[in-house]
Picture 1 (spheres, rainbow, N blue to C red):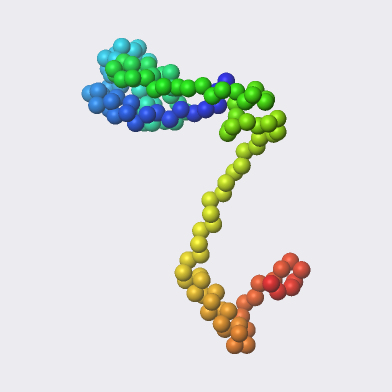
Picture 2 (cartoon, rainbow, N blue to C red):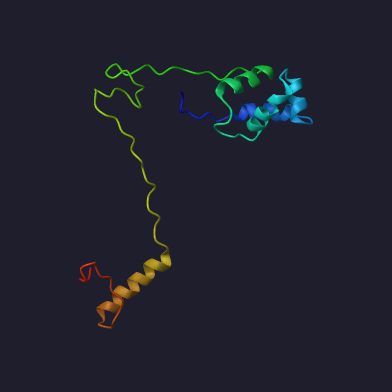
Amino acid sequence: MSTQTHAVSLETVAALSSRKNGSLVQLARDLGFDASFAGALSDILRQRTGHVSLLTENRVRAALGMEPIATYEVPPCPDCGGVPPIGRCHNKPVGSVIVRPPRPQSPAWLIEAAEWLRQREGSGSPVLRSYTRQGKPY
């Protein structure tokens, strides 16, 4: 079973939107489908990722007179026989790496306040200090 989700093409949405003139049931019948196909047309028009398969979208595209979306096969890895994420695995486990977005930069007012506290600490007046779990200052 495939775990891929299919995102509907914007060309399909535009072509289907231009043909819609009334109810989706009528549109389904105009395209040569049963009335029950109106739900799939609704999913396409709303661009609901994962609700419409590539096969279904290609059927709609054919009914609209458009070229089907081409698919291609990924050759299996010569080492393990699985689908390689990139190149060959060389019989080593391949894991997914989650990349976190960069930390947002502190706002300017916070940087200025921290600088002001650093300057004030140098003058000998008491300020707030950060302590570690062992009770020692940073």
